[in-house]
Structures are given as structure tokens and as C-alpha cells.
Length: 94
Image (cartoon, helix red, strand yellow):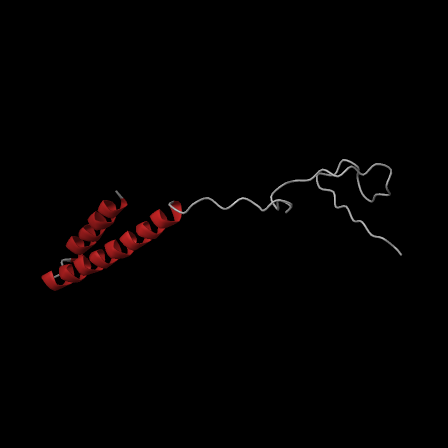
């Protein structure tokens, strides 16, 4: 649909300018080039969509997309207790 609109738009500009057949040929060549590029992009998109899903994480590895809830308990804190994000740091001073 967008291709047709683009073609009609270019045709309207060409007709309004009163151009020659050489100019029309140049416009058609440009359209062919654009169509070839769009076909290449569509092919690449189809290839990406056909890729298999990502492999599951190996056993024992943490999931980087998971949200972990860590109870703070009576540990010292800084900032509001109801903060939407809490950073927890553990260190061992030995």
C-alpha cells in the first residue's frame, strides 16, 4: 500500500512538473531500486523471524532477566523503606 502511494505521489510530481520521458525513466529506475532494497529488507526480517528461540540457560546459572526479592530484615538501610528499587550490598570485612 505504501509502495502504491509513493508511486502515485511521484507520478503526481512528475506530471505537475511537465517532465520528459527521460525524467520518467529516471523515476522508474529509482522506484525499481527502492523496491529491490525493500525486498532485501523484507527478506532479512523474515530470516530474523524464522530464527529459533534462544537456548535456555544452563543449569546453575542465574537468569539475568529475573527479578530477585531480597529481604532486608533488620539490616541497616539508607533511604525510604518503600522505595521501588532497592540495591543490596554484601561485604565481608575479614
